[in-house]
Amino acid sequence: MKRISNSFELPLTMGSSQFGCYPKISVELTRNMYMCDGWQTSFFGYKSVANIEYDGVGRRCAVSNKAGNLFFVINNSFYGFVSPNNYTLLGSLTTNSGDVFIAENTANQIGICDKENIYIYDYSTPTPVFSKASLDFKPTFISYHDGYFIAGEYGTNRWRLSEANNGLSWPVYTPGSTYAGLLQTEADTVQAVIPIPGHGNNVLVLGSIVAEIWTDTGNVLFPYTRSTGFNIDYGTINAATIAWQGDRVIWLGGNKKSGTSIFMSDGGNIQRVETSGIAHFLQQLTSPENSSAFFFEIEGHSFYVITFYDPADNVTLAYDLKEKAFYHLTDENGNYFIVKNIEKFNNKYYFVSQNNGKLYELSSQYTDYDGAIIPCERIPPTIRMDDASPFIGNEMSLLLDQGNCINPVQVTYSISRDGNASFGNEVTLPLNNIGYRKNRLVDWGFGYANEMTFKFKFLGDGRFLVKDGYFRGYQ
Figure 1 (cartoon, rainbow, N blue to C red):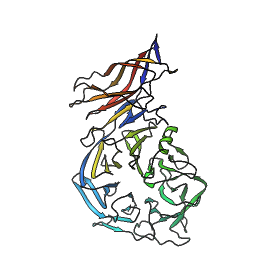
Figure 2 (tube, one colour; figure 1 turned 90 degrees about the vertical axis):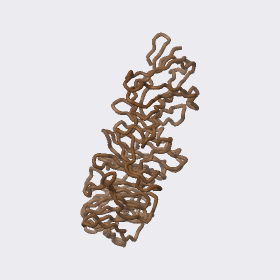
Figure 3 (cartoon, helix red, strand yellow; figure 1 turned 45 degrees about the vertical axis):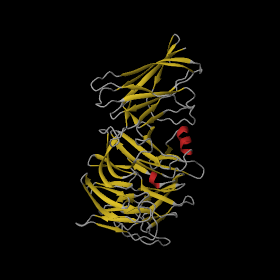
């Protein structure tokens, strides 16, 4: 606190969502914005590039650089995409909704798992073929490692291998099978098997309460050997929340003794991605298993984005691994973020949506959500004297970028004076017109209180850049 005589100055800081266990502790929140080079900036906008199916539900997209295609599933249809006006229906699944997983082997085969069947799109011949594999099990997930497609077997501790470089052939299970591994540390069921980034021969076998490391040692009877000296005491509650990129794997999970948490591992060390506040937040969710997540890297930031779809939860969180900070993301109506997962293709970022049958492009060049205003919001930490004594608020100022938008833009603020139980009426401050770039936003006269919390909303179809401001008062 900076104090001159009986006056004082406190910062109005930009930053991330902090998840106090109770409102009195903290309601610090950032919605649809993130920290970039010390400035709070609007999150990435998007626009639709193809309306594939009018009543569609986007389920997954994946890139094959080898095939030169972005593949995606909407409803029960599997598509290949080259450009906005060049996409093709390649095959049909037997299911219309639910999680889908996609992997590719080195034999020019794309494997698609809808948790009921495994389908193979084979583009190795001039006329590609889409087929359903013959299975004696119900798959939970599909991945690729060292020549094999790998899938968990629903309801059991088994994980299954395809024949090498042949996703259509999954040998029938028999005890001692050379094409099946067993999760052994606990009585558990396999949720997913994933390659561990940066550990070429290792895979992570995730159950619901435990995980194991296995290594491809080239054994004749079964190629993988379990690491007997190490296991991870946490599984995943939904394989759709597993995401990996670089040297990290992140998932939503827990075990028999712990509540729901977000975990991150490099194949050796494991850590919880949380504070006491985010742990409290996760425990309050109604249906944490009704969720999905993805990784994407853009403009120097790596985001793990997880969405909880239950109407009672209806929330999306983005964890920035660079800043080690959480942010809230929403659609234009304040509901969960519509992105199912993001893939980079031809140096652009594309995604399908849980809400419709469109394909979208995401970019910092877009400052709206397909024509809708992005609802940007920041609640800084509460202003309070160390001894909780009362004060009179005199001046508030924010430093921000102005004069860039043709259409009118504005900032509104409201104030809580009751320990963040409620906020008062909103005050609107118009921002400067285009070309008028003075960068301070100032207002005065905030009355008497022993604590104040500001809620700022940044409204308009342009980009917002906001730096730390200040609050001045006296006693």
